[in-house]
Image (cartoon, rainbow, N blue to C red):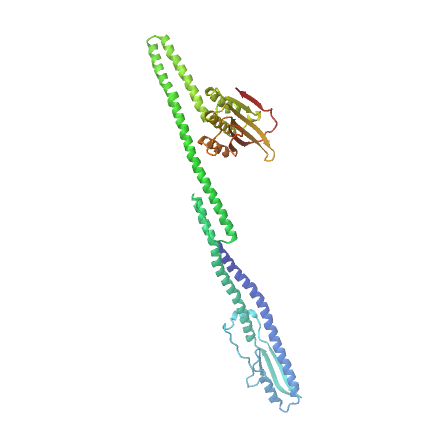
Amino acid sequence: MSLRFRLIALVWVMLPISLAFGGGAAWVSASRSVRVEMLAARQGARQAIETAIERLQTAPDPARYRDELVASFSGNRHLRVWLVGATAAGTAPAVERSPLGGVPAWFVHLIGVEPTTDRVPVVVGDRGYGTIAIATDPHNEILEVWNEFAESLVTPVVFSGLLILLIYVFIGRALRPLGRLAAAMEDIGDGRYRTRLDGRLTPELARLRDSFNRMAARLAEADATNRRLNEQLLTLQDRERGELARDLHDEVSPFLFAINIDAAAASRRLGEGRAAEAGGHIQSIAEAVRHMQRQVRQMLGRLRPIGLAEFGLREAIENLVAFWRRRRPDLRYQVEICADCEDLGELVGTTVCRVVQEALSNAVRHAEAALVTISIDRRHDALENHDEIRVVVADDGQGMPEPNRLGYGLVGVRERVTAVGGRLTFSNRSGKGFEVTATLTCAPVPSPLSPSLAVTEP
């Protein structure tokens, strides 16, 4: 059930409850009022008759004055007065009418005031002139109470009707923006992040609208970033696959072909009994296998840091440095790895290796540097209660002309670092060269370890 109809249902529930309480209070008051009114009318009439009888003691014609006394009550709203035993009719109150109609029998029964009769004997001297009867008639008083009661019911009924109308109209208008918000949220859930809300709203709903628009804008930005990163990831995967395919084609496939030829030649020589010549072919096969092992090891190193799981972070970093030292022996490599950095876990350790791998590759291939420095340190952040791994790869080369325009490799590394809750920054050094800095979080060290170890490679 909608909020609008819940409020309307609440009004419908409260209306009979309030009418019941109000009717109960009115019933008690009305019943008492009718009883008091009837009692006062009867006692007043009796007192008036008794006073008139005292004046009859000196009247020349007591019978005529007695009849006039009875007739004097004509027009009384609450009393019927007559002479007991007389043939002439007494006085009776006029039956009043109401625009609301007659009094319902259930209301008369609810008031519960029955007519009462009182008799006053008329005695002048020693002679009796009959008995005057006084009877109360509560009809007109009950009718008056009924009119007041009905009018009192009209007010809350009309008020409740107007309230229900106002709730239906104004609450409907107030909730209309929430309907638009719900539709907009469905659009966001379906991936349409460009959905926005506009229009003039109340301050509370305006804040909700502005918050939704900011959320939608951030989701749109995040979606665009994810799309861009997916495209970059696919590009990186295609490039990596292309490099692996090229290495397999250029480095492995020819040696597999050569092994096939040497194996066939060795088989023929052995079949001809020329074992000495077959040995040369077997030696060639062994050399080809060793070459392919080195190539496969290098390819595996690009896919996963070699030595990280087996020997730790230091061995993996030294393998990366050794890879480039064999190809660029003219450069100097300086590696400083804190002893506390050995047990980082596979996720953080792999991320550190990828940062070093990409930054070292860029420094060797593009920086035209003479020295490349790799520093890995671990520090404890007492404020955040965790340890930080700080990785710095710097060179003394020519720097990057446009540091804000990064290649796919550095972009991929930055996203990898961000994914594990770290930070990656790039900057040209104040003197000369380029620096890549990564900060990663990891579990705190339970106890101090040995001091940092420094390894300097010529």
